[in-house]
Length: 163
Image (cartoon, rainbow, N blue to C red; front, top):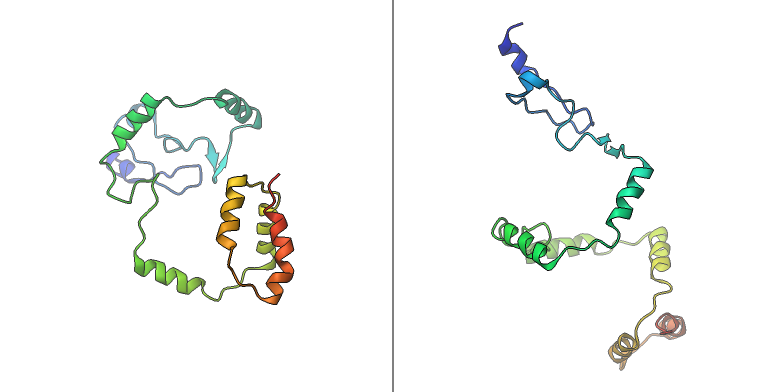
């Protein structure tokens, strides 16, 4: 086999991502790696870090906060790198046409009983501040309710009680 045919062989990352490893000049001396940089801690998307190591990393990061100076440096490096609305930390700008398509797609769709129960459990037990309760009360004043809504009104009002 000549050196030309050796170069044409493609080696894939062994983590299971399916990406090809880019062969670099220094691989001639140190060998072609099995993983793409950063992929050596997982196989098929599952992390190989033990629970103990995860716990140690978590404990070291407890109470860790980024200083204002560091936040400013990060902000300065990211400024101008991304076009408007494409920054990974910002919400993307959605056109009115896309909003309308999304609205029409969701129109008439029914939530499953399972998702309703999950949502109900997630929202139970919330405690609102007095200020928030006043805002809710103010927004609901003057609303007209049907018979079924008035029957359920007591249940709804109980969920807004501030403790």
